[in-house]
Image (cartoon, rainbow, N blue to C red):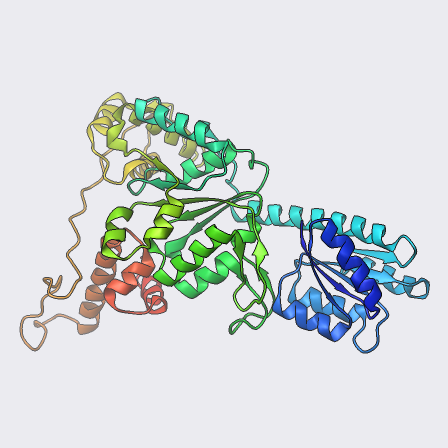
Length: 461
């Protein structure tokens, strides 16, 4: 079912098509002039626009051009009388119009068929966008490597819950593969043929996250030159994965709660609601119970998300899987590095198995990738990661990483280099303290996200 705009200067035709399309289950709005159609297109998102060509003032071709510029994702169907036939054909050939219909006694049936065809094209376009955005979206249980009881339990849970449409909350330490679990749920579900859309909630400031999730209409903010669909719409009939959900601000939590309750989204700057059928899977490495008690995470949203909790086990809980994972990553990276390495050295495997892996599977993968790049023999020898000292606190009152003794720098110390060292150290400490979440790190340092990104680029972090 779709959102349809009908434009015709004959009110009777608008009313006829409104009734017919609503009976098909579509959401329909009608206008009786081209100028009114342009205003509607500016303020709302439509899947299909059905417009007459010959109208006084702004005609249908001008409506088509405006839609193509402002809402390029919308399909446009032109209705034409016999004497306008050539104009309609030219519009389709030029690539702007999706379809055209001759006005005839069978107009209603023709419009219903054309709308159905257009919605199919729109749906395929959205699926292709989602696949391009996330090319690795087709993961299954086979991608969760391991034979340990913890992993077998996890796989059983995934198989069990995948058949439902209930909201899932995946929790676990950083690097345990929470997104891999979400993808496996999607792949094992009846929604497998539809889009899987992943978004990191900690990677966007609040205003950008809202427009990313819910879309926006032309003129909603500076730079919004055309309508854009949000990721909830892109994931319609499929799955949306909200990673780092604990990083959402309180205002965004309220907006997400409304989406989960109403199953509708409103684009930024828009005036109408858009129905979405999306399975929501959220993930966090934070203790949400603690955040709820501290008042930094909404209790009502927590219960909406935590319908089915799934825990991703840490790597130290399943040491028997480490040899399998090590060889899995070896096979993944050796061909790309042009290396003929047949296996991981036995002594290295024993050492890897005895390590507690604070960074979990992600840290193990990085370790194997580095070892492959450095290996010169047919057998992989792996050194354990160098332990990184704990970052010093950045909060007020903490000991400074670079204390300044006296009013001037010691002799021979360059002030510019000294200041750069301090800035770099503070950035790194803030990132360590916030588990790499840049928006949160900027808040810790008391600077804007934009300034933080600028310094990150400056120091190549």
